[in-house]
Image: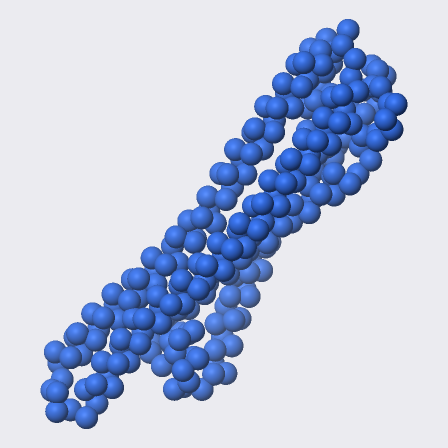
Length: 246
């Protein structure tokens, strides 16, 4: 079975996440870096930090997929589907030729042009109906963009939540340790500090991961919205404005 581009990217980032977690074996036990990033000294490799790393890499994979889609959109905008000749006016024969050019293309720009040419023909060559189709498709693209980012937004919410769960577990374990040991025990404060370190490390790491994903998400979202705007201008200036009503 052939995997989609989205599935391939997610598979790659999951493998990368597992490889990254396995690299932590190279960090010696007792290392402060290993304790913060991987919780190297407690229940490794089944730690809250490692779970967060896997989720973080999945979030990166979703953003990489968005970049792939953005590149495909930009490729369509840089194609020669529509003439840039300022004197070009599309007649019925030109529309047929244009539709045959974009019919089998898979990028969003070609699909949009195909819908516009179809609408132009079906509406008995009405420019206003074709323009309305363009507006409707652009609204749909914007709406779909918002939906497709829902999984990334969920991940940026999930990471801090898991971090806080790790904090609760760390505090709970520290209280349990304090209740089971005597204050005269030389390891009393050491045991409690280890559990409290886990509590604060998970929250710190989760907030850093979430901040990175949110920053990248806003950058890529802005570029995709600019891409949709560019697509609108491309079709409006090079197609809609060159149609003639009958």
